[in-house]
Image 1 (cartoon, rainbow, N blue to C red):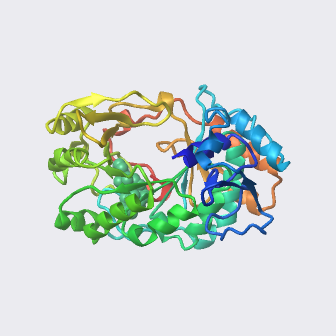
Image 2 (cartoon, rainbow, N blue to C red; image 1 turned 45 degrees about the vertical axis):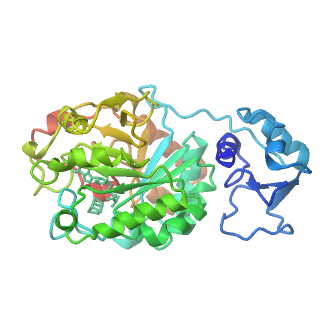
Image 3 (cartoon, rainbow, N blue to C red; image 1 turned 120 degrees about the vertical axis):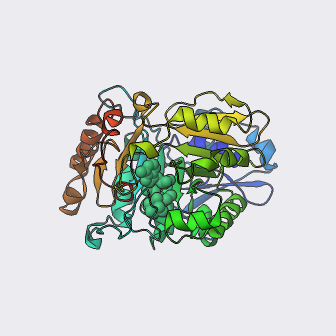
Length: 417
Ligand code: SAM
Ligand code: SF4
């Protein structure tokens, strides 16, 4: 707990640790340099980290500084280690509509082990040429630029991000760029066996897509997925501390809309976040119909049949409007891109698996960074492309209008949902 707080505070500096301070056995605090992998064994002789030895117990040592005060912690580190800390003074880049862009969502693959009916056609999609997919180093390099302009949150998605073989070094590399909140969206099929190593590599949180609680229905919706694996993934994520675990559910009329209240009820027994995501006219033309769409009011009314929904304070930035059933440990979120457009507080930029910034999920405008990167462009040129992408974010999407028609946008699995 304290460790996490310190990690966040120190994340405001360029030279910082991967996991904040670590309590290394009672009376010693260790500070890691940025970039050192968490899975590396600790060794006092290793010059890549510095040990701060205190003769007091950790909690007593921490009382020396005000935990809310990054300046005093930084001063303490400098005094004890002669380490140079440069305050990350760069302000978070704002777009043309004065929105601070501090969240990068990266699709790391267009490959998937499922074919959810609302996301992909039965015959699958034509895959990108593998040589076009960004490499680990390229992704980390782009995150470094984004971090310089104030990005603090990164989410990895796809396709199915856990299919990527280099997912572990990718996560530790991204985390070491000073990213405070690193999360992943996954279908959960491979999560159980990976949760612990993902956490060790630096992953903070996980969102798991689950659209039904019924095993047969799950197999049909996902065209072959195993629901037991998802629940094992949830449990293993909780054990690993990838919390809060969030469940993403897309209600589609006639498919799973009868389960909204059962999903809401999950939050009454567990500290789990269930997020209802409005079905969007993106991707599979076979499933999208205006009639299949449920708006926020209808989803909320169904969720409220489980218990009174109490609105929680808006944290800013994210698209989710959060509630809690009175007395429940878990939370319920509504992400309603069509009926409750959240564009005014949009804080994100997307990067596709083939290296194109996508300023808005619902617009086909893209800014290619991969080609210049592979042609050896200088940092200044790449940074200018990042700024262009942020500045080309539209004021809002036109989804209400588009929703009346057939979908025409690229599939979610290729953009990164
Ligand atoms: N494969 C991973 C997964 O399913 O979690 C990550 C990629 S998937 C494209 C990311 C999210 O997009 C999932 O939660 C999925 O439910 C959502 N999604 C896909 N198509 C959608 C659509 N047409 N409308 C709303 N959400 C959609
Ligand atoms: Fe794959 Fe995720 Fe799309 Fe399902 S929603 S087909 S798991 S990318």
